[in-house]
Length: 185
Image 1 (tube, rainbow, N blue to C red):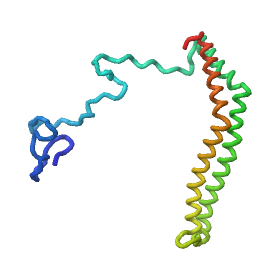
Image 2 (cartoon, rainbow, N blue to C red):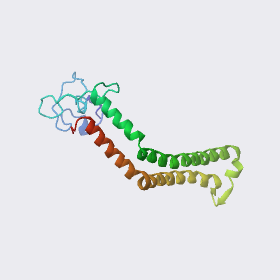
Image 3 (cartoon, one colour):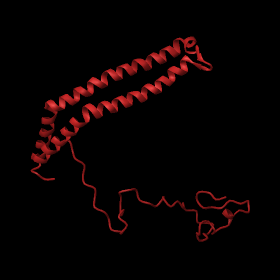
Image 4 (spheres, helix red, strand yellow):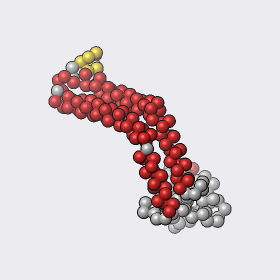
């Protein structure tokens, strides 16, 4: 048997105990105990010479700062504020809130009532419904079912009522910020 640092253990007649026969590697001296992991010396993704030519890659550009100054930053910020103040943005936000607030409230009430009932009325939750299936098991499965139904309803609501308007807002925002940068792409 071989350990992680390629040192061989005594015992057994298997091929893993013969020095130099492990996947075509050359035999190593016993005093060489360096770590032999092929990923150990690999560079992290995106760092150093990741293009395979040995030449360093282009440096990563600096991150955008929130306190950025200059005419470009002020114009872009104004474009975002203009979109945020628009009636279309307010409509998308209100459609979102009209779905999410009642759905979250209903789901939390259903979840808390399940937990409270399970802790305060164990006799009711243990009441058999059909064979070994009891009220608690049905309510627990109902939690899973309601979670999937809520996710489906949210995705459907977003697709039918918000996605198209949000995409148009995104396009408008990109056009406004492109104009704020002087037409550069």
